[in-house]
Image (tube, rainbow, N blue to C red; front, top):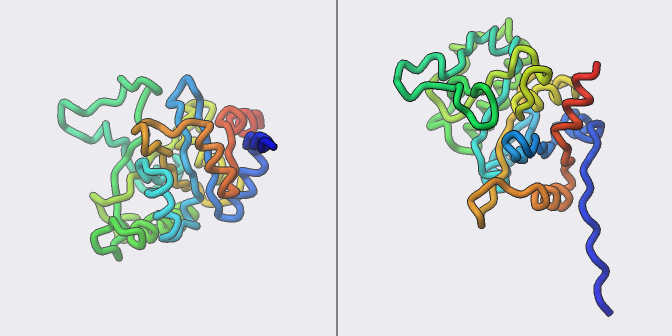
Length: 226
């Protein structure tokens, strides 16, 4: 007797994604096929532990970044990196997927050693989440140092109505879940092809681990219609 075909993993609802973030759990977000066409693993920054950093580098494999809401970035006086680099390579207006990069500076928490270990990066990331909850009460320069091993991203001042990136989607998801406006985003890559992990394989991964997989289009529709 032939085995029945395996059920195709289903995409999750926005409500499922918000509930996961409320519980400090990761969400997989596919942005748009006509944009990056990538799936990012996204966590609320404040809840990140060393085991989560290990999952991000082993299972996702992309660049581990912390996206910050614009009000937080303003409070910490964080620039767009391309505006600060005095070198001919610095530019942000020739991206194939957007008008400008959201990259800001890189930081380590001042209590880290090298800053790159799972424990060090978890301290930096979770502390960024804690600082994002009370930006006006945080002495950013006394808490963090640059350069470091955690890349910071500035979300657009106008959110998803202006830019539909994982940066803005992560911050919007944190807001909806009642978490501080700081989210870890990391691209999911394919070890075999060297390219972005396919949506099909990312869906299968989410299904195996019980993580929500949500489409960026659904997040944009849900979070900008209010």
